[in-house]
Amino acid sequence: MRIARIENRPVLLCDDGIVDIARASGGRFGAAPTAPFDDWPAFAEWAAEIGHAEEPLGDRVLQNPVPHPTQVFGVGANYLAHLAEAGASAPDVPLIFTKFPTCLTGPFDPIPIPTGTVDWEVELVVVIGVRAEHVRPDDAWSHVAGLTVGQDITDRTMQFEGIAPQFSMSKSLPGFGPLGPWVVTTDEVADPDDLELGCALDGEVMQRARTSDLIFDVPDLIARLSAVCPLLPGDLIFTGTPSGVGVFRKPAVFLRPGQELTSWIEGIGEIRNPTIDATRRAK
Image: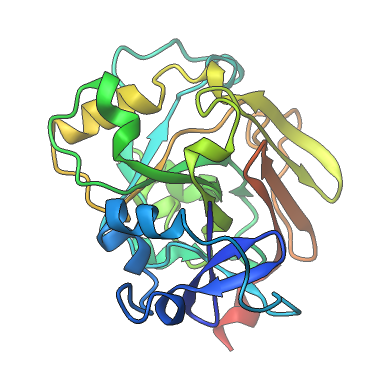
């Protein structure tokens, strides 16, 4: 099952087009973007019976499929090769931060570049479907609605300003959380614990790895997070980025206006985000 958002309404994507969820369900599931996740078990059961599209997708633009999560968690230092390029050792516990939801944007939306030290970080993003509280790792996947592709865009200068790292602030500027192109349920991928992910800048591959390389995998992250606070339907977990980010290249490489950042995950899809001068967005 693939859940997308078009014209600010949630839709199912079928091979032959789209199904408007609110109309097709007779209002049982609403038109709000969060509607599929508000009662995920009932929605998943209903959606499984949908066989064909109501209408073609046409030239309508796919938007961020999860625009209003209550909580957005990020995980740093979660791939060994990324730690190696940073000259750091493996952590005993995951490094958790938050991205503020206002930074989230769509799969083809521009990324505003406000400084000369903005970096890319492709990530597998988990979408929670069922409230998770004190969940055991063995039960964690049952609380997941699906997976999507994300970029944890980061201003490296802001990240290390002050007496302690500013992870949340540096990763939450407008447009610093592209997501999409849709949410894919785990039954649609061969192995949700082992997916290739990567990104390219103007066609040059910058990152390529597999999610099986995660130090703290998805079930472990859900268990650890849900032991601290409840994970709510529609919440997002950015699970961490592999090696190949710009700041650790020699010389360092950062995003500039006028480029295109393409990000993909096996079995899920691809997002393509142009970069623009941040002053253009402000006008």
